[in-house]
Length: 104
Image (cartoon, rainbow, N blue to C red; front, side):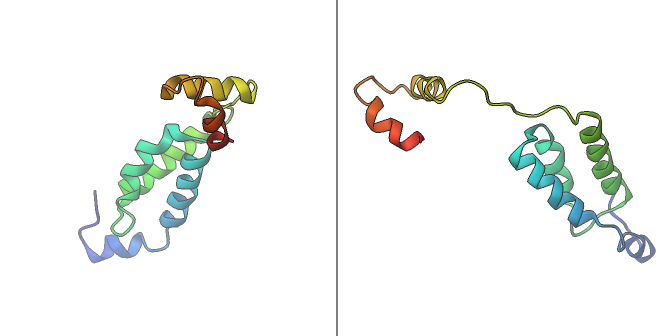
């Protein structure tokens, strides 16, 4: 996968791999967590990339293009979200007032 000869390494020099991985990391952190695992696998080869790694990044970009309408959507009121978070955290009703400030 990684280039073994100097010729292969020189061929990969002009490819904007680091920039593409950085942009995809931003997308994975902010609004597309579905690409996080695949991106993590490709990000580990930033220093010693080969054609297979660049192909993987292009596949992630194609996946994003095909699923452009996918993403995380937050709906509902703040009160419902806060109530659900408190329920999951096991917060009692007497603690809700003090905990609400932390979630604001």
